[in-house]
Image 1 (cartoon, one colour):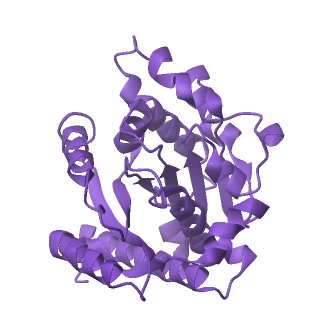
Image 2: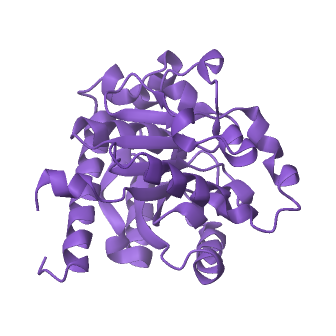
Image 3: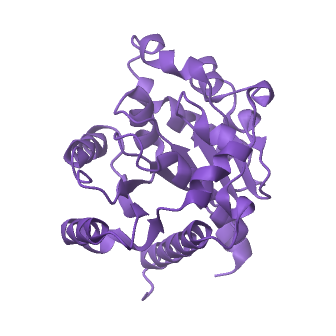
Length: 279
């Protein structure tokens, strides 16, 4: 299949979600998006966390957020009109701000509130048919609220960052139950894209034990690539850059490049299987 034919396809919409905070959702959204763009994929991130950390981490200050995800969900502004180019070629973002924290109340009387993001994405893709994206990554808030449900309703799949710490699997069953409910009532195509292990410390026996436990539970849904605990990854957002621009050679950057390659290979295999080809 040629690159031209592939680019005409609808993008893969991936919700990056885990209701636990501090597991690396936003870090993964920023750096996975950057790594995908680095291997010539066209990517948009939707920052759906009211904290707006993905927007800040990609160098989009509050004064440049003329339209945000709030305007898209509540005011009905076009998704593509809210997209802002980032410092990374091929990577754009729909920024966020604190107004998103009030969405739950503002949509309380809307019986179709769970479909707001899906409708916005579908409409934007129709209007941008000549400027197709390869991936849309949605950075979800650390809770199972209406924003996360909107993300899962709009997504093809969910990517779950899971930290290599003692309570890694705690609460994950609640997320998976939410995925099952969304699949049953709102989005039958929703799939588990995969689990990515984050904050891995090879010097720590606990990290290895947690990784083995997660692989036992989820099998081949766990990516081979593990994101190491790396100080350069932690420093990069403070200068408004993804770690790949801050320090390309560090272990964190190399891990996200490896993860991006795994995801692209996974997507190509899925497409071949959909066409009935032998992988």
